[in-house]
Amino acid sequence: MDSARVDTRRPPPPTNRQLIPLKILVAGGFGAGKTTFVGAVSEIPPLTTEQHLTALSIGVDDTAAVPDKTTTTVAMDFGRITVDQQLILYLFGTPGQSRFWFMWDELARGAVGAVVLVDLRRIDDCFPAVDYFEDRRLPFVVAANAFPGTDVVPDRAVREALALPGGCPLVRMDARDPRSCTDALVALVEHALARSTG
Amino acid sequence: MTLDDHQHRDRVVPVYAFTGGRTRTVGQELPLEAVVTATELFAAFGGSLQAESRAIIEMCSGPKSLVEIGAALRVPVGVARVLVGDLANTGYLEVHLPRTAAGDGGPGHAILGRLLDGLRSR
Image (cartoon, rainbow over all chains, first blue to last red; front, side, top):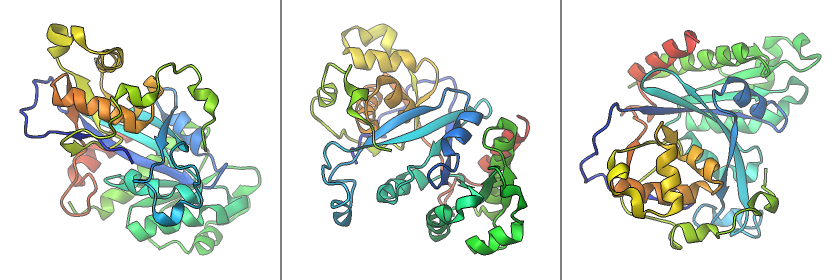
């Protein structure tokens, strides 16, 4: 993808305070509630940004899936939470289609972790996200979004269906409810903190 | 999601014109969540800057990330990255990069702890 660089050799200009950006990914299958989640907790109206797909950003194997590589764009939802005077947390709704997964690597780099939203009526849809974060060893929580009829599925069945490791949190939540989304973020950060080495 | 062309119809100037056709500038690559803030340089020397650069500096009177700037200008992140990189290199913007701990590439224990406190108190 297009890439800009900042010359770090020049002395930094004067500033009032040093800020620290952080990011959390919100992943899951199509229609699992990613956009709703980001909108519920963001302090700014959720925005959509574009990433151009270019020859630099897609692997050779992906070009067949993206025939017109110079004009294809991917939209990505994001929101912001100002945590304190210094920390600014960005939430990124990851593009759902598997052909855009090359983008996840950039999104996942340096991330706190991921919330994987699951619609228990279509549990298979979140397999790719769970696999991806397990492979990259990025901390994640599985958040079962409260769709009608899904509260009868026991946690044990969800864990078994997703082959979740014992330490991976599973939370029940409602992506329309800001409190519930914040609780899911707290569960993720607790998990990330427990696993943190640095 | 793939964007439809209608989102670009009111963009009169082609995107590449903003950057003089460039897709890169020099120095360190800026991540999507890199936050920038305006410096005081604009007040003194900003008069000759092009409209897009002025718009970026003005919106960065408060902290803004690369993705927010791209969305506000309705340009792809790659274009915002070039414009922001140039303005940072010339001193109009200060860049605040994410901090990564040596161990796992994540933000590290201390910052995660502060994030947890901040989220719990919401």
